[in-house]
Image (tube, rainbow, N blue to C red; front, side):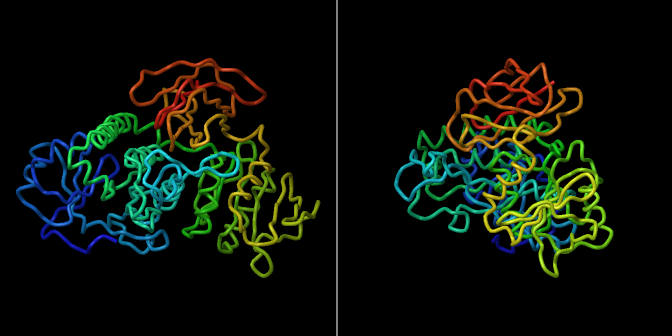
Length: 437
């Protein structure tokens, strides 16, 4: 948690939506060039320091008082003042999972060889969904709450991963240096400095291309969202399995659109009002698969028009209008397995995006900025650079290009396979965008 310090007579807190911000405690002007090398545009200070602040402003850096940022968990944000600057404390130190050893190159993989990825992409989607008038800002710290143990050396590229993940999901992260990396960076360690400067290059590309990552997500799989951790973990695993979910507040579900919305996920939510209940059920009536988990007295989805089609060990299938209701017998206990269930309901051939040869990459299919392309696939790589990534995107496209930091835009051949377009990305670094027209 941030200390509750306030700068006296401080102006309105800065807008974090287009800043690269870092918590900084070393108030010596000699570090300002180093700060700027990391692509930083805003310095967040715990305590006032007039001389250092003046030097920062002279160098073009903005200043923000740390005490003016409220650090809150998800369920508390709706109680904050509408004008308050809020940073979500939920979050894991991002990257490929690593064992407790003194190695910056080892990683942990499961039995299948697929690495475990610590990711926060879903938190940005949730914040943008539930609190669209606030910056989607994360403020987790490099501590045990975020999965960083004292005996683990975090990878030097961790901050670049955290920054790229945030911006690629239309949000921001309040950068915080892990203590070991902080000491190496300020001590002039060559590898630490190179990682910092690489983050600066990535930051410059992200800020120039911010509009790419603030577009609506394909609604093929749509999830109703409430501010609770159970729903958040379900969304997390849908992201991780590249299900590319669109998120909508449960209190205001969208109108039916069975042509584009193949599944509406309404699990883990409170029983809705009568009006909202009717709107949710109308999706199944129109032809969508409505997925629910409430049972017994909480089974708000029950309707006399439902006709059970079949029963499985963990769920029942009912017909309703032109669609179906898939009702789980219990609260979702395994979000990973559930993510695969949702994809199976949509079917592989109808999912928004699919990846091969990219075990540490998370994709999200969205629209593109008007006039630039028809669709976009955001690609966030939590591991090492990947070669020859095969991507299948729902829709028919003839012109496809790859954008990423440190490289010119590259056109790649597109092949129509069923209802999807397949392309191969020759190489993906930290983050990229696939533009489809």
